[in-house]
Length: 248
Image (cartoon, rainbow, N blue to C red; front, side, top):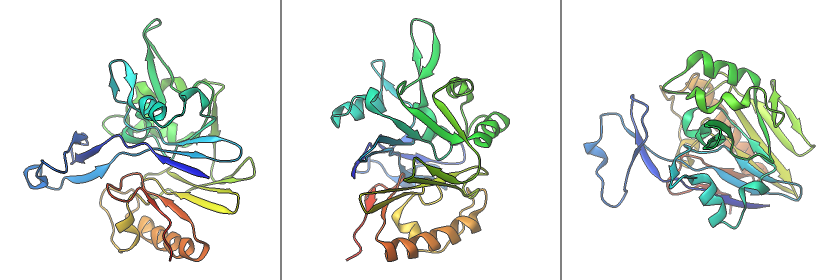
């Protein structure tokens, strides 16, 4: 498998849930609001023997009318039309902003990856509309409701015999994680249940999680099993280590 991180940059986020760009060489975290977290926003492409997978879709920022995630893909040598599956861990705005883009002709949002199947938990979409802003931006999600490209999942299962998904209900009520097993390799994407390498190595309960204790226990379980089975971990919010597979 080939893995390509698609970094959209480094940001701080506080209780306002606004993502504010942060320059690690120039900016001072201490000058940001108390309790600000420093995070990367980083979807991933995983190229397998069967698919070109996109894991989450970033913030949905645009520059000169082009989605940043589209530009990042093109810079990596991948046409957005080549994405075959979009695997959504959950629909928080920093993970789901690139799901759709505005069609200037119709002035309506349309799916950003029209040739791909989108896989998400059915109850997560329902919860997004129940919860709303600022965690979810629902007008970006409207085109998911009645599209033939969308596959609604319920609970846990396996896609096409090699992608395992599990609804954890940890970071948020209907959050899901993925294992991709291909060519004897296992890639694990824990999204916001397991967002950074350091969190895998320490035991703590985060106040921002729906079930922080469950997140903590799952991270411990995954880290131990990952070491035993030599998984490759993908960390969506890690500034320094987006990919970890060094078990030597």
